[in-house]
Image: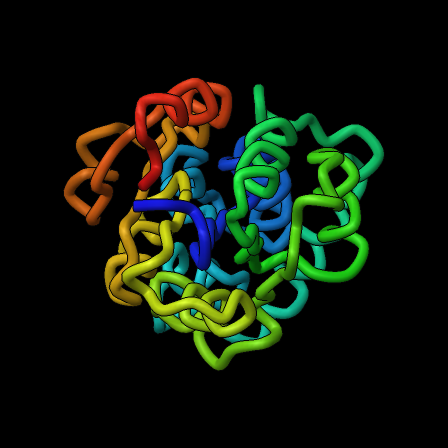
Amino acid sequence: MGSAGRAAVFDVDGTLVDTNHLHVVAWWEAFRQAGHDVPMHAIHRAVGLPSTDLVAHLLGEDRDTDQDADISAGHKALYGQYFNRLPALPGAGDLLRRLHRDGWTVVLATSAGGAELGALRRAIDADEAISATASADDVDEGKPAPEPVEHALELAGVPAERAVFVGDTVWDMRAGSRAGVRCLGVLCGGIPRADLEEAGADAIYADPAHLLSALDDGAPA
């Protein structure tokens, strides 16, 4: 299928920018400061959920919800220390520029906003290729609900069958699958291949550079 009238929707953290483990450390410390000992491996599996959902997922529904805002604020402050040195994953900017050059509409679907989103976009360094950004602030439910991906498709002006969604977590794959788009998983966020496939990934790549090298072979159409 040709690229005309097609959209490539991208998650950002762990997909285009190497931030997942920075988030893990920031969340771990924020939980610790609030008196909770949460294993890092559990936090890693939860990265990609909106902040409130992540706290609920890790502490349970019977937690003291009065702590939620402080824990999220702690994470935000700790993670913000890295804004000036967030590392793009290999090939991230080149991949977006190549898709844009080939006629794809590139949209970011991320829970980040404000200064955090600005830092991520600076790391990617491909603003000329990005047509729009669908933020968690724009929808009622974040991933794994389909709304972030559906909103990205609205911004792109294309139907689900003419789009792909690229992400690194099971939450991404579930959101994309529920939105009816073809899902491409990347392993650079640290989630195992089998988990991504079980959650709905149609194809798996190592990182953006791997996906870029596969374009000449027909991916992601």
